[in-house]
Length: 298
Image 1: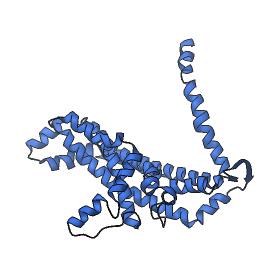
Image 2: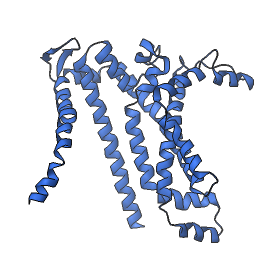
Image 3: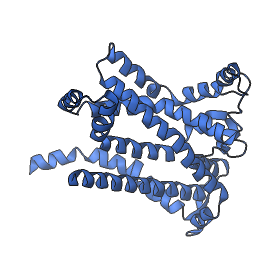
């Protein structure tokens, strides 16, 4: 009994820190979302009930931010996971300097997100950027990568993709290495090409991992903040471009809370984002259960 109590006591520091820095802020933010609160007078709370949430339903800027978040997430997640699958499949084969390539592919993730965003902003500069210079060499007109709706979103999505491809590649690689080599040897004897082996053995074998990375990437996309904030910087970055063409939900939350001082409304937006993340998790778990059911029936 004493040993059991002694072992449990090691958990108390974590529980205490979680209550102070996790549970209490969450509960308090939920309460603030039901009030009208100013950033400069946080002690003066006026209870308004669900008024902030009703305002969200009628707020065109919120729905614009939600659309931008979803499109940015799609533009970043889909290429990111497909490229990561291809890279992991290459690294899964015996290569010279395999350790070097694995470290190299992980370096973008270890790079400061602020530094990488600022560098990409220079690459996508309208007048002197490398990307438009490259387009000019192949006979294409320059693109306004900051003012355009889709062009700015593609540019920001490329930053996210570049940064997270290596991270997901290593996750896929670890999962691929758990697949038995006997399956590949049998397929090779049957005359299956490497592409066929990839489609029929590798992808089904790491399906749970693919689903995991898709769910985690979706949650990350719902919280996308630094890249769009620093892409142009200043008030334009907080607004998500001159016409809010890439303002995400977290940028809109930040603008409401710290630029307009509407802490109550910002808290309501935060809980709306939390609800969307919970929905994404529920869909992910549902797909995972359906996948296990299909494989069990097979």
